[in-house]
Length: 482
Image 1 (tube, rainbow, N blue to C red):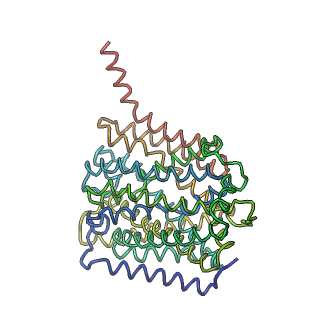
Image 2 (image 1 turned 90 degrees about the vertical axis):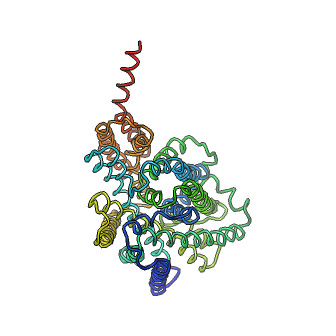
């Protein structure tokens, strides 16, 4: 079911890429090519630019597609336990981020902070595993979702779309790094919010009004999930999403890169502003899921991934032009995360792997690392494509599979000064080896209860093992006091 010709699809992609390149070039000053300029935008970003950039970067395929899918398949309970943790993750980051900014004002990455604080090489290297993996999966997940949308729109094969979308994001990110990402983030968030303000009200109006179109679908396509605190959702997807999303921001260099780029006095405002901007989008998109689940409309998802219910619903109530506009919104949101992943990945590579200082060839190395991480993301997306049964939800769970391993130890490193870094290393290692492997296995085999236990295990094991020396000291003090 293609909505436009393949030729128009290719033209759309060409114009989209050229537009982003022109905008980036226009807003980038000549002579700006320094390490601080490329990686942290000279540390001069205000909350008015930082907030939209944070919101756009958090618009993973999960927020754009899984939010609608949760509303469609799991009703208001599924939508709530996806959207609320998403917003909470950014709100909590507004508390944690200034603490590290205060302790490490000239930093570039979170693993760099860990290295400087603990002077432990093996811990630093272990930290890089989830941080680098997170950026690769960000590129992979969003390339897959973006290609799926354009395939639905145009019929162009996904295997051709993967490198095209990657090249578009890479082309303008190579111009000025994080600055390019932040400038295009602003444009992309404006496009998405404008599209939502146009499309969602029209769908609701044509579907018979707010109450008639949405109320009958609040329980999801099965009609059984009308209670936000439904135990079958709250204690399964609720736990997985909450742990994964809150941990996800902590273990995502995209947000630490913005922490170090935004002015210190603007940091808290930027994350709160970004959180509210972000929340509007999955909230609005979830309405499409409820309408799609309304049994009175008989909307059939057919053989499509249920994450595409938003597009199918719009096509039922609006002319094809609005479907194209919606897909353009989706591509804008996905592109913002791809370019952020490329920029953040290069920051990790140059700072933590190569340990490059401000030298004549630093920009060249940053650009090479951008190309490298893009190619790795492309390799992963082709591997994912070869798995016939893979869905966007599988990729979503893969994206949050490793992040709980280091989230609590990271918070501890900010608030507790006498942590033993060797015990932290073993705590994280146990969580990765046993927790992530179990989570991955349960994701592939759709064992939701095991995924819940794996998430909890990663949080508990990494935390408890890290604090063993502190427990010992506490017990010794109590005994001595007695």
